[in-house]
Length: 422
Figure (spheres, rainbow, N blue to C red):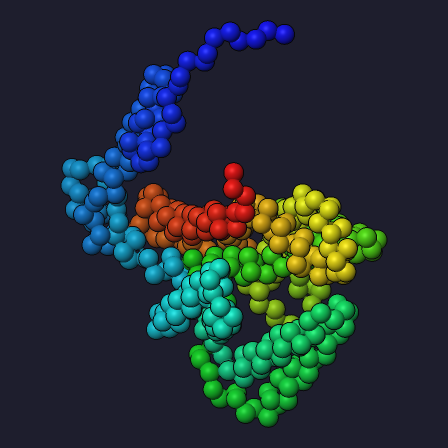
């Protein structure tokens, strides 16, 4: 064994500067080759940004067609024709939603944002979270409208179910399920009786059919619904796949592997065509609801696998310690195992959510007009023939804003939940 006979030469301390000064100091410490590559990369990014900026700065907002854009630009080439966005931006956002009722999706979007802020904030109190839940409940009614009777009774039934779950907290799971089913049946009977007497049938908002939904309203509705419902379903499937009960484990595994082995576009075709075969005659199950169900099932299978991997990463000593304290299975999962597993799986879950939100553009294949479907319709208009980058760039920008916000929230949440001090 050899030993070093001389002292190691002193090295400069790591750079603690931030911003541009910190990057320059880091480049200097890493050597000339790293500095050259970094400078070249920044130069390429600046050149790309300059080209995009020159293209985007264009005095064509007042144009009513491609011909008007050419007349405004004259001999200038390589400029955007923003008249199509000025003329069709409402259609790209809400599709064919009645123009005199645009205030309803606007209010629904504001309520949804307030509900998300109330539920996702770690500092939110109990009453604020309840307000967030009520904001979510109000959004579907604002979008679809119709008689207020069914929506009011559905809200009352939901409140009764939540109350029953709170009152039966700590009791065996089968007893809780029985009480919840009993309350749900009672709520449905109340709905039927009130609709029979028609006491609230004459009150409500003007109904809007799902076929009038489109654009980012449709993508946002499908994506938000799938995200909201797929997470609890994915947790249930992950627990079912890791269960010691053979039937429950087999059913969960079969569902997960089947959904993961089938493309989403196939499930959408099933939702649009084949699902009606299994429904009662003359039934008219809403197409958007069918798509939401299929996208939710698709996302839940992937989330279940992410959470299952996170459950395997939790040390077995955690469950053994919980058992030594006298906690049962559900208490152990709810208080000890699942919080750690969900913390581990945050990046994977958010990545799945982002993918689901982007995959909502596939609904154009089954006849629903999402932003890309509307973009194709707009390009088919003779006035805007040849327009490509402006429409798809606008759609890409909106998708980027929502997806980037989700990724930033996940990183912020990881930092908030970080417990190690390394």
